[in-house]
Length: 284
Image (cartoon, rainbow, N blue to C red):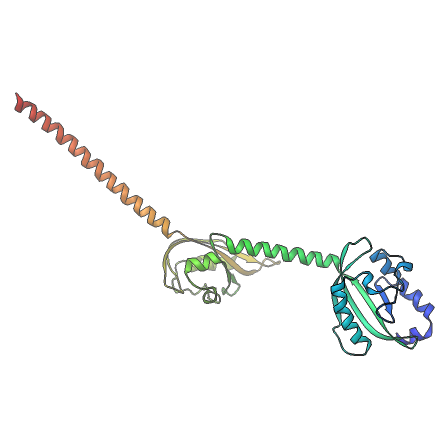
């Protein structure tokens, strides 16, 4: 690069103008030369851009941080290799760029060769994924049913708040448990099914491993498969139906009492009929 710069500035300009990446040549941080790709990305003509400073496209906050590092680079000090910053085109559209700066000699003076890569689409994709993950995490944590996730070795790697509350145990005491080797074997077989790509279902009594809490539960399990269809873990839906079972027991007891009441009422009615006849004969 140094040889090219020393050989012919005109040749250098022609070469850099044909490069698709955005190129900036800066003898200092206030005056710089740009190639055609810069004009296409930011919407400025060469006349508008050449001789201007980096503040033409970079906001003040990011610019101050960048200037400090670029001054270090101009003085030959080591700095980070890449910078991801927000810039704005002439029409004030926000863009994300990756900037790489290299110290060079230009006309026997210290200068910077700056290469900019437009990563706007990449960042938008990343932002969408982050937002999607944030929404999923919020939904996951706030669902009123317990959820636990285990990896292909059947080790619990995540739980939501409802699951922790059902077990009445802190998350850190639950993570790392081997769900294929629980103390209470009630629904282990339904978990093992997921390794074969099958769903599992269990309804019944269960004693928790961490707190020895006795519950009535409904457990649904589903496998998690990778892109090739191979078992990569599973997810369990854990519903505590203990209160429901108590209500059912109370309802059954109430039905029994109601039946006894009806039987007693029927007997009393029949006995009353007999007494009425006896009373009638007594009156006669």
